[in-house]
Image 1: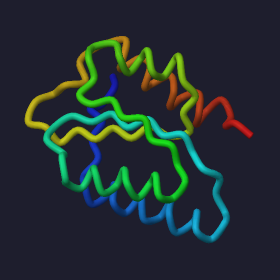
Image 2: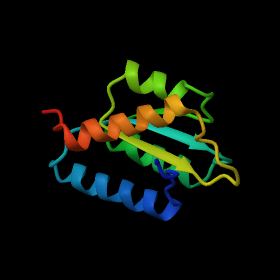
Image 3: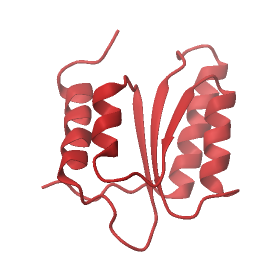
Length: 117
């Protein structure tokens, strides 16, 4: 059973800070990031995170809020090094089975089948 994916603002900001810190030290390549966003984020923590990642040289593709099946389409048609799921809305929005399967498969392939060079 796939648990509901949720990141808190402070964790995302910390993650962005870590990525930027490592990236500024020259130890990391620029990543292609898929950011899936639900909720009200204009001018908030997500916008700041996205800006920081882009300034750090990363490419950020945002889906927000995604239509059912849109996450699956993005993951099968694109090549992403990271996926951020930013869901702090009051309702459960990740309900489409194709999207859940695509996220599960992406994670499994990246973490258990080896990682790209």
